[in-house]
Figure (spheres, rainbow, N blue to C red):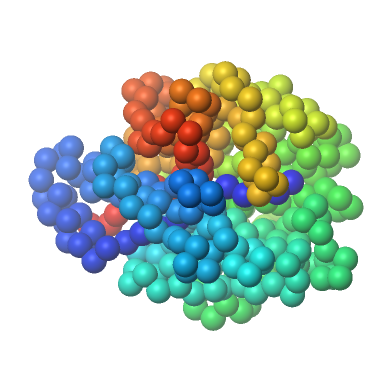
Length: 356
């Protein structure tokens, strides 16, 4: 159930100044001011590291390096004000949640009792005070493996303490992974293969209301059935919709048959589904030495901060390589390529919010 998908933050001091200047300009500039950098993971030198570029693909820059101690950097998540980014970092063989601050300094937020004790896939709460992540930390370190069922937890950003468990796995079923709090702060979306009627490893999308204490209040509501949503999900800025990837045709029983990935949206109030892309099975699945599961098609969506577009990784390059692209959130049209490369893989997308 591992899904080592990658993306991260980069903030420069001029960002907020530029944003204010653009917000005083035309409507076109206002939209671009709200939509900041797009971050993604790219394998340009034998290992995945984080890069970021403008939404049109210009000015790409590398944000993480092996020299910083990262064997890989993954699962980026922008803070609500866009000034910091949490991410999964593999250092000294262990996967933990890290934060990159506005000045470029790094903070390790979680620790591992063993290399197989994993904390990853962070997401900020709406107030920016806590980070939700997934982990197998309830399994004794001596017994833990990378195939353990995962649950969701939250941790205080300021201290790295006060860890709270948000879901409870049963048997080998995953209680929750890829947790994403809504921008309004009222809901938590996540993927799970819970329930005896679900094939193990076939994840659907769930949402649960959050109480004032930040803990789930009531039972989760299942939004999809048989979607195979094991990679990623993203809220619209108004908290009314979720974008997610669905692996069409995947049963969850064969690792080499991952289906054909497409991007879909679901309306929270009604459960109405809308495809943004068609199932993409043009190329064989991509896997990277066990670091990633097999990825295929269109995966890992990220809604733009202004709500107008959805960016994602698409296996549409000339050699089947993943590129970062974006489409209109309303109808999936106006496809724009953010990154391109004949053999380089670009996976997992995060879109920075820029505040006035």
